[in-house]
Amino acid sequence: MKVLIVKLTSLGDVLFALSIVGDLARYRPDVQVDWVVDKSFADLVSSCRGVRRVWPLPFRALGKRFQLRSLGRSFRTLWVLRAEKYDCVIDLQGMIKSSVVALLARGAIRWNYRRDLMAEPLFCSFFDRFFDSSKTVPALENYRNIGATVFGYAPVGQPDFMLGAARAAQSSTPQLAELPTIALQAGLIPPFVVVFPFASKSSKVIPHDQVIRLLEAVKQALPRHQVAMLAGSESERNQALAYSKQSAVLAIPRLSLGDTIRLIAVASGFLGADTGLTYIAAAVGVPTVAIFASTDPSVLNPAIWASRASAVSLSEPEWMERALSVLVQQNSGHDSIS
Image (cartoon, rainbow, N blue to C red; front, side, top):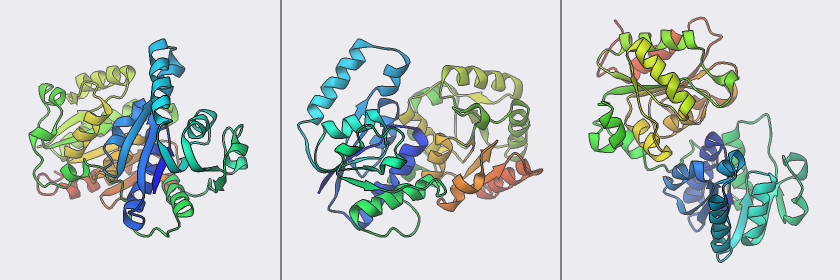
């Protein structure tokens, strides 16, 4: 059975949707999966061992700045995609652009959200079958339930995202060869801990004063580890540089998403805001603490599905002590709290 999944954005949602691929490998090994994703997140889907072919489309870039060349590439990609025949096409985005892609693809059966659940239901009537989704259920569980509905199985146990980087994270002796060249040139050497306080939504960003306190506390708790900061945008890069000057931590130059994932997989720990990179760290098996500035940790707590992850809320009086306790415990062979 040959299947096309259309899930374009965002980083965290694309990751959670990849759990379907892991479930299919377990319960329906006869299913072959191709995936349409925004070019910005193609590296993540490409790192999934269960995806045969990735079709990247630059929707986000086109939305920010019209580029005739990017538009031409999109049309060429869609033209080649039209040559493929699929038994099933699944739109996990539920928006006009994803629906157009799903309808352009040649599929015997097309699935989408129920009309009342679609963000943009304009093309709903052109789909053949529909699945449910619940706002009260965590996104990861929703995607696994959708896969179960479409393919007829009952998923149990922890999700498997089938990310190749997970193998590096499971190694007890991370190799320098696993690190991106840019990071090595910047002076990054294992063991190290990554701190990522940024997020696309300002309400999720960890406040500046709390970040400064956290950076100093990590250095004190894990004195043999480097503390590194990642940046996903130019603005975040500038902020990371400012933090590095103020707290003497290492600001890593901007990396591709693929290189970022490889770097995270070699880390001894990851402390991050409620954002996609934090969940990727948990997914590849790195000791991870998700720090929730405003959102409810009970809904997105990675500890529910990742054995080496936990979550804290800034509303907790002793959130930093809890976060550091988890991180030190996971790295007890290297350091201890002084």
